[in-house]
Length: 187
Image (cartoon, rainbow, N blue to C red):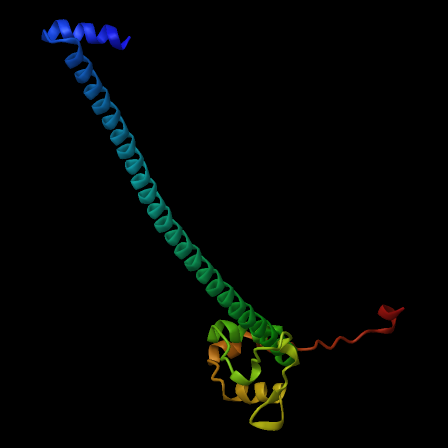
């Protein structure tokens, strides 16, 4: 096959056989070198793309880790808020039940409507205490119970006269009729 190419080159360029063989060899070498360089360029381009993709993957990984960390932080914050709200709810339920036991259901509802909330006292709340009803002592006084403390608070609480009237029933003054029965009516 190379001899056939030499003949074609020799006829086309009008040169002798040795020169045609030399030109064919040079062309083959150039072709091989070009092919090697193209392959190396392709490999370099491929490696460059791989490095670029690897860097993009690292950036995406960092972004995902940051988002996950923010999400975890928000979840922890929400769990803290839920715990705090649960403690407040338990404290409010305990106070409401204490008020019901101390002054009756109707008066508690009137007080709730009037004030809208109970004043929070720090000495009723302990962070490790799950049963708020068991907290009965005031830190400032060793002998004061919660019931006495609540009574003192209610003595100082201003209740409008209109609210006081809601819980009272009007007194009826009915005259008792005196009827005299005769013996015949009784029998």
